[in-house]
Length: 73
Image 1 (cartoon, rainbow, N blue to C red):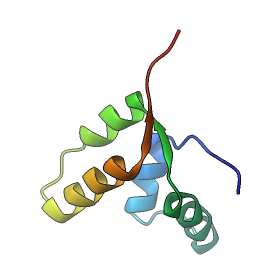
Image 2: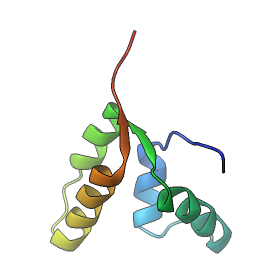
Image 3: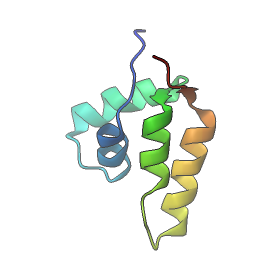
């Protein structure tokens, strides 16, 4: 399968179940592999303020499983 760099908007929409069923399946297939995110996306995702601690734990687990790409020139 192809590799994708996942943006924070995709993470937000996916975990909030805002995509169509087809899009949810597509993103789910990508996330089931080792997802690629940038360190900027990591920071953005961790900055979400949520009273739902389960959602926060899901995001943290997602980031732990992700391949986080560092900044480079």
